[in-house]
Image (cartoon, rainbow, N blue to C red; front, side, top):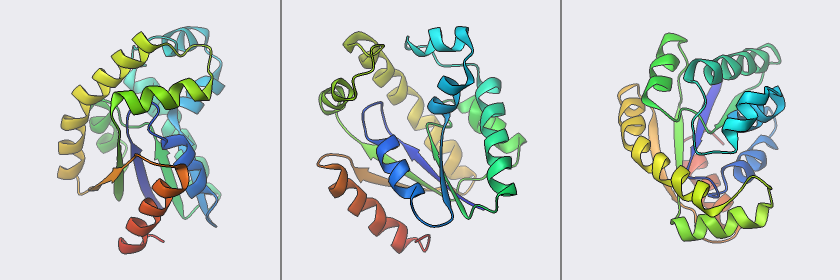
Length: 181
């Protein structure tokens, strides 16, 4: 099974793009945020409402289980949204022999991201938390990218400005060029 990572700050459109990609035959979208929300753990749900990251081992366990399920269902490509978010999670990927073939980094300014976050209408979204998450994301992304590239992951920067369709066209072009589509 091939894996594609989707990276970008909250509001960058990772989930929208991941769901679009999952519509391709034999592909699945795996969002760690969705897995955590569906897990129903009250403490985790409280943490999600803040800028705090969830325990690395806990998140990795959920992802590994979901990837095993996808393999059992003979999924061809898993689109992973929101993982890894820390250098420790990259280490856990190595421990679990998880590889990421291509990583798509959707780039967006905070102002553009905040506009989109407001549109999605989650009651837990507020500007202070969004700004803090954006800053944490930016702080962690450099080391995550470096570590994944050392593991052989190819990173591609995507301009996240514009409509969902415009960004989707950019992504599909890159996947075609990469031989994944």
